[in-house]
Image (tube, rainbow, N blue to C red):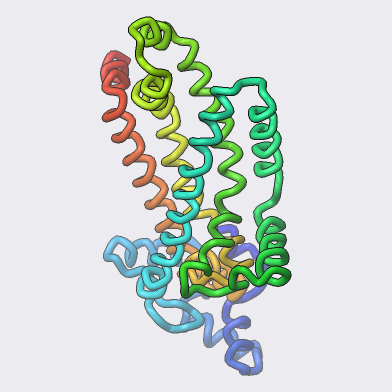
Length: 289
């Protein structure tokens, strides 16, 4: 709805892209062809009826089915999101655990400082910084596009780094809370090694409150890759969305929002199921409520 408040007529944008003079007559004729001459509510109902029949409409610019274009670009966004998600899991868990085990040490303070810096850096600025250092200056990674494995490194790091800092501190807090519980002292009295206590008991219990956060993060990565994809010219949904907003391609914008919302809900549903598996007590407590 909000993109329709922008005072630029889609018909005029399309005519200019086609290098046709946007006369009032030409604009009106194209509006009737696109259906944008109807009231907003009527346009929405027409689009919604199509969606219920798995027809997401036709792009104003490319004249191709929106569903076809979105699902053609969705794998690239999913690939980037899962690469960033893997970095988040692979970095935040070791850092959080080490920080908790060496609480108030130099290591803990260093990890805390790193977390603050990573959370504070804007994603777009981080992307340009990585491009400047590792692509332009050092030439270690490609600057844009998608192809080899090296193309995904910088976009994935840009997308993951701010979340790594947040997750690291959350894991640190959870592990510290678990280490203070009686079962840890009991396990030590039984003669269990510290490594066994941490890996089999503390980490498992500390992971339970993190599962909800993980699901929300995966949804946010899929929907929040817009800036990163634009900076690195990654051919995914985010970049496609930016182009569609600029061109006032309403069917594409509406379908993007709907699909990302569905993915977000499904990710959170899977997270709830995983939480029940890890902690059956939560299901019992929900039934009592």
